Image (cartoon, rainbow, N blue to C red; front, side, top):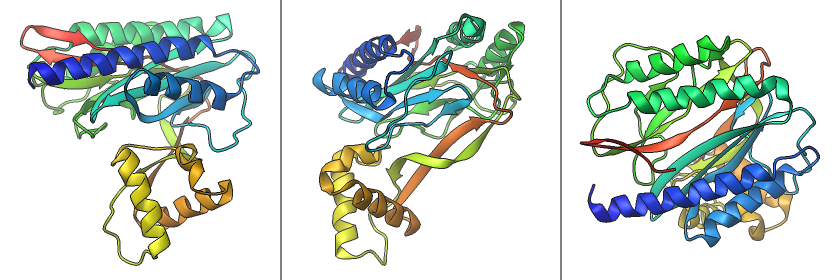
Length: 297
């Protein structure tokens, strides 16, 4: 990773951090989710980057992967715990970050648990460190607050145009996960809950990605729609909202469903806490160097 790439990552990280801070200020009861997310995505674009994935705004027992759909009417409820998760990339160099906004004082401790767990994880991460030790630091911190870490969610290695690049950073101690490698970027994202400590997939899917552009059995119309997606986002995750210009809302939704059914697209279902517990999340992207670690978001 040369200095030019590092500077691109730093710029993308600053843009993501700016969008995170501005977006968090908009989270208030009664505000439309779509307005917040589209504002966040607009900030990223106008600042010189592109969303690495659709802005996620997951509420209460939704842990991750809710992004507003075309003409979404959902609003922030009273007394909510809201996770704002976003990413910015420049030329495929991705940064990923998240913050939790609590609208009821009784959940402030829940948010603090995941925030401190992130700080402890960053203190732990260094080149050569056993990845399980990072999970141990997160787990110990969250449990010290009386909550559970979400065991089947965690951070991840990031590569160019590859948000989840195969290395998992657990939120609990696990053996045999490998070691942190110098000259790589990792997203660290502790999740804390007052529920069961696990997520399951919900029925709704609002985020998609291109699985393959070489799928048999597509009509010319379907191929054309697929290539318009690929030309805009490559294989990064996307929202149906980003392609509302390709036709009426129902047409866009139907084309995406068809391309998923035929194997050209994959979906990322909303992730729900297994016991409907409320969930908090904080996240930074870090660059691991020979001298330590640099938080770039």
